[in-house]
Image (tube, rainbow, N blue to C red; front, top):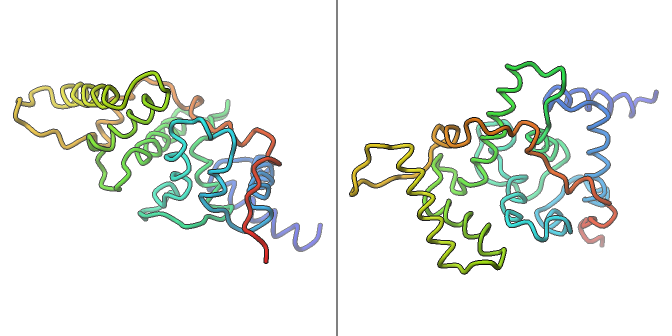
Amino acid sequence: MGASQTRTRHKYQDLAEKTGFSLEQIQNLHKRFQYLSQNDETISKECLARIPALDNNPLRKQIIEAFFDKRNQHEEEVGYFEEIGFEQFLMVMSHFRPPTLKTTEEEKEVMRKEKLRFLFNMHDTDNDGIITLDEYRKVVEELLSKSGAIGLEVAKGIADAAMLEVASTNVPHMGPDDFYEGISFEHFEQILKGLEMESRMHIRFLDVDTTTMRCGKAKS
């Protein structure tokens, strides 16, 4: 084994410890990353925006933004990257890693909390720790109005009613004149309590023919 291969293997081992992926999974994801970037070291939002499988996804914008959200790098930073490298790409992908037969109950709980935090961050677009009515409304509007089945005003009404129901559940003794600031992460956990998501939350668009996804920067 050459020096370059040894360094690569050591790097992959470090990434495996950080993300929980196996060395084989990391190698496969690296191939997909190379297809996306055309062997460049970084990818931009435009790269992911050109993935055909995301075209009709109503949460397309939020999914793409999530890859560049610093909060999803297992660190305490906020804000967004202009471009990300493979390690950052892999850290985001780790949020979608399903449990294995060897995963302990304690590890499953940690994975669930990380997935919930990831979903929460997708909706908390201003990084203030609260999903406000406006943020919640935008998501519901996109989910409903883009289907073409209902109009924008009807979607807004459904979003408002849904948020009111969430408010009454989280703050049962709230008065008619009280203002509900929004959904905190603790409330978000309660809303999704009992929902099995450890194996459901995953990304499938990277499983398609990656030769149609290339979007590397123009070469001079």
